[in-house]
Image 1: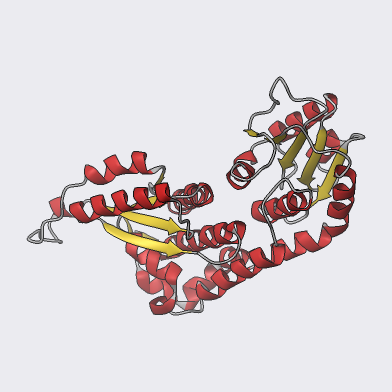
Image 2 (image 1 turned 120 degrees about the horizontal axis):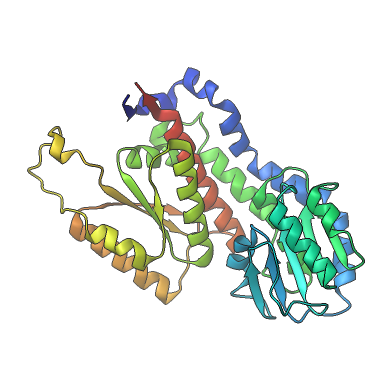
Length: 342
């Protein structure tokens, strides 16, 4: 049984119709953000009022989805911040601290355990999860603010929490409409109805279809998006995709055999999958990010490794993250569409 990529399938209406549920789900990403922000506005306003009495000593992002909050909050949070992804809390956490949790599904046992521990210790608790879920039941308490969500979408749930943190001056500026618009813009440009010649996600899928993608993002959020995109590629295609920091990806590029212009592309020994460096650029002007990107691109040029760049440099940092993430997820979807198994 062999697998190969047929790019003609990306513009075949009959094939695309078979993948309509998956592609429609991606297209509705912006709508889910608007829905959660709108439906949760009253609960968020109430939570803000309750939280204005005292600024917490520290903010603890608890539960399995805490890494996303860390990527957003760590650089800007005015009080000590820690991400704690396990089923418990730091030993020092207590009534002076705020515990924030994303639980879009509401059925995660680790999340329920962590929020129950926070309630037991008397922490201030803000949790975004479906009302009536296991996590919501474990979060019930005098100092708990529940932000109800319904779409089970991690990014939409994160935006609800980040809007709350913005309004209590613990997080960066977050505008749900701006994030939703960024997602809508990606959905339009990457729509299955757009020809592959003008569709960036289809073009990127073709570029990495016969390669081993290594995905890099320089800022904390771009790096988070890179890891999520690599996960999507692995999940949809069953093939390898690597994401990591520059120092972890450089050895992979440097170990690549330099491309020989005299290689026969049809000879078996020349058909091994080569890496392709995919750079997720969110417009960060940090000198360290620029230096790392330069090293990666210089090494890729030396070894003949192709470089593809996905750019999202407009809007807030959360909007840019959302744009990069959805662009990469569309690419993973089109890789699945074009995959043929004989």
